[in-house]
Length: 460
Ligand SMILES: [Fe+2]
Image (tube, rainbow, N blue to C red; front, side):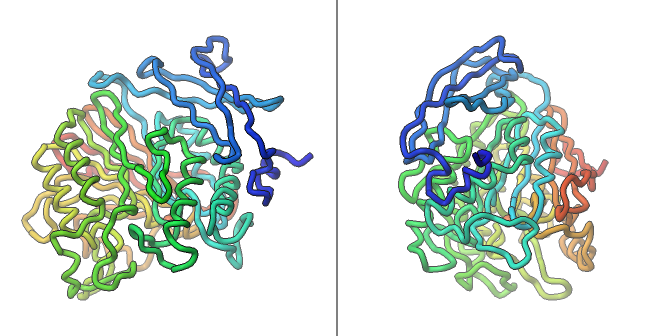
């Protein structure tokens, strides 16, 4: 008989499971040996949900460690560890949060997930591109199953292959995850209901990608998709220390300024500044404003996809801004920075997408040279996307010089880990020398401390 990892890649659309409902028993225990089981139950795994189950629990102790496992038939899962958030407002121990993005299976080994798991964080935030929808590369580091994801079976197969990866399994087993998608979870550079490619019909494809995403991610019923719509944005609270606002900059955004396509636009692109343009959509913007207005936590963390701070990507005299990041939606950015300023919030923006580490200070208004920072942005590199990379590129120095609010760059793969208390936030950018071979050791390429009331990056 094939091992489970192989069977789950069967091209039968059922992930190797029989075409019938299967009961799945689950247990939650206060100890790793499952002597003190505190909750247990049965969920029915159905073929129409690709035999996924979502167990929603209440009544667990706040700020506590638990272990869980599943059983169906004669198969027992390995135990997973999880941690519950401290009670609202509670003074509590630090939050140890790690985050990363962009896990392209063909581009390399998922060593970053292994190294994240070894840190035993309280929470892992994944900021998009958990899968890549692409077809086969000419020279992949690892072979993927199936071609380009175009329909439900295709997206399910890609997720199944990722879930069979032992290093990704380690990261899921060590801590709870907070997840948002970016473009490749659905299709490269999609914007609202506008695809990059016209075929297959986009809302059909988006519905398939959302369904597979929901099935495979630790999401609650509140996030369950309805056709091509899925409310992913939400807030997770960690006592009095931090609120983590997970944002969706893809589903409700206006189309790309000036060209209608994702790319770099020059200083002549006035549409970037149009006051009615939005990257979050009116509803999510109003919701986020309310969350920030009501927030009483020391830190407000914004988990999201694309560069928030201004970034001139063109070396030398010319200007070049990405119309896919918040630079393409300047009014949207200004409304957010105004809210952080007005409500006196300690904003820390957590970003993915660009396959390199960056850290910078977010000014209240990038058009005003006198403007002060109101938040800090920490951009994580990828798990594998873009291959091994380099610590620095020939143009790194010029980019940092021309964008003085940007304080740090590293071009390897890896993740970011943070230790967050009411007194300070300590951040380590973790890098890997290579992902074309397994088991690379991680090193710290940059460390910073941020203090409440002072949105600055202090190098350590
Ligand atoms: Fe990516």
